[in-house]
Length: 346
Image (cartoon, rainbow, N blue to C red):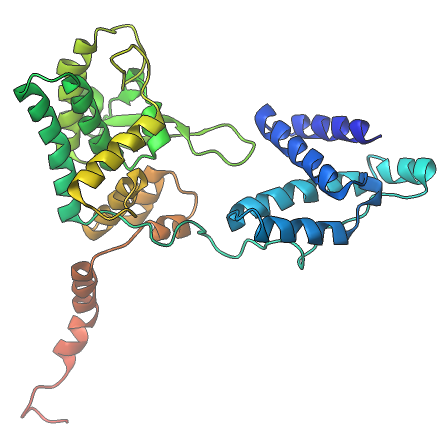
């Protein structure tokens, strides 16, 4: 009966167009919950959910979002079982004299109360930190060439890669999976030629859904110049003209997100920058710096692929100088309207 339930739930999820990996992960979670309770679904109670949630919270040191996802898998499965359209309640009552019930409620699951549940220490680079980081990346190329060391091509690739993450506000994985064909023209910016737009084909997906695509317009001319130099002068030296990837390795593969992270950490450590800075901080910096430069908020939101402005707001950490400038703009008219000393009033 239990295996039949899982097969039915799999079929329901496939009918909704969910990815196979998502479905398999959910079913694996249900099997683990079964092992924890040592009971079949028709004998599960809210108490089982209470005990399991307490274990996840106290013993496994998992993030709240992870625990909520696990709880959500159990909730979805039990909601499927008690749906009268599928007949599992009647079948279990007839076979076992017991039937599935709703075991998840607001008091034994974690509510999604916040738009952002990531590390509160996450922040963008300051402009000075960013300049130091990018300059250091460039310096590694010059050092490798000067001392005739191996890895000059890889260092040049990585220096350009970091400029692209910042210059187009990309996620690390989005950048790693770029292909040469993802570079395109923007008719509204002919000065950039075939580098006026990036087609991001592997944007962050909603759970169970395929990656979301978006086009990111080029806005920083210096970043475009860096990509042009890399594509036209450096990448051909890797000797892989037929490889589709924008970022190739000296062994003939595509660079991986973990390799990007390793290089980033090495540079951050060498510069003694704060550990809360991560490759994702470059994306935060893109949003923050464009905001400080007065770029339209809706444009930034679409560039980074956020569905709502609240998500973009989380990425924005404007400087004190920017806040003071905005304050003066806001209260300036009020100050000008106040009467001066000797002109009457108090």
